[in-house]
Image (cartoon, rainbow, N blue to C red; front, side):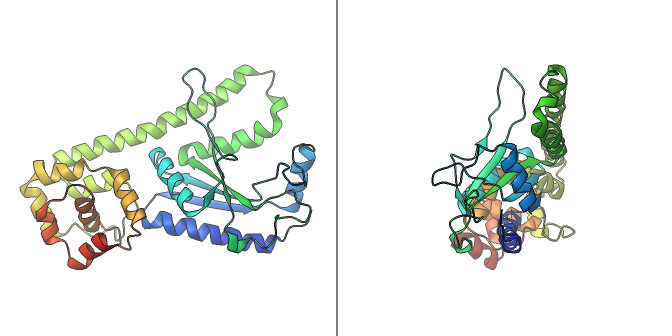
Length: 298
């Protein structure tokens, strides 16, 4: 099977650049990995399931020649990441797998998304000479806690199902480990939510913002503007509570949708929150005009 690996590595690098650019704008905490399948890897995949993939028109194709994996720090960022990817690439919904949770059984859930390669990066109908690989790429989304489990499961169970078929207890035990990791995922969110509340009650506004927003802060050593601190300290149960109750997902979606080119400093986050949620005139009055114009005029 002939693949121009150098060319597809360039495509991978461009896809990585696009995703990094959009995720970094909203400050998501994540890691991004990518790879291009080697000819030997593709050959092994075809030999493992010789009837599964067909070179003819309409036949099932290999869709993960180019693959990326996103590991997110927080499980509630999965939906945010998915929505961003759907808006910057063409999503193949039929070929994608986004599993829901079952109330009756516990098993690994998948978040494997298939997207069409951007048209400017497709020079031929297929990625290989024989027509087994179409012009798509795969993105897998995991959390940092579940990532290691998925690696072990993929290499030792998914690829060798016969090793597990007569050992149901071992199968369920491995799934149980993932259940524990998912509990940790949600526990981390609850912990940070509780910490946000404690900092709010103590009027530790900077700490409250960091744990509330959970994003990569620009200039992390820079303090909140003194004018903001004065306003919050004078009205903790009004403006302070208003910021404490802000909808994080709504704020991040606003930054993405409006393509805000504003460093995510603590002060700028307050200015953005104040414009997205029902705004307070006191905060508006101390918002630098250049920042206010960028927020309102995008």
